Image 1 (cartoon, rainbow, N blue to C red):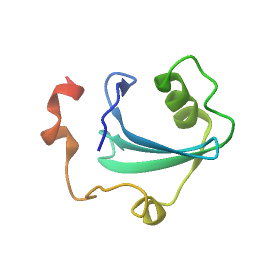
Image 2: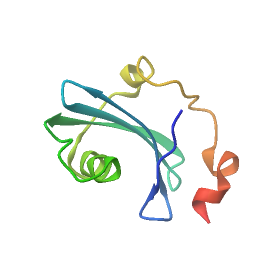
Image 3: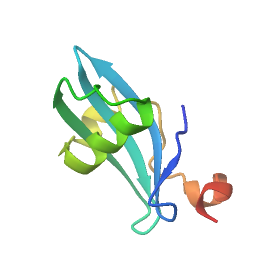
Length: 91
């Protein structure tokens, strides 16, 4: 699993993103709710100047994507507390 730059610097951690025909699907971890969340973009979102900009667009403006479906795309364990495993991202 890839780990991208934390969003808001205190409670959201980008974990992975996959692109399908210019449509992005994003997996994040929310340290406040201690939940994994997934978002999907519309087409042609990957037009920012960096991958992090594209990911931020998906997180800010994408629609929620069912975690059941996200399990088919990403490998993650919903019972893992990433605050403990990757504490350096939540300081």
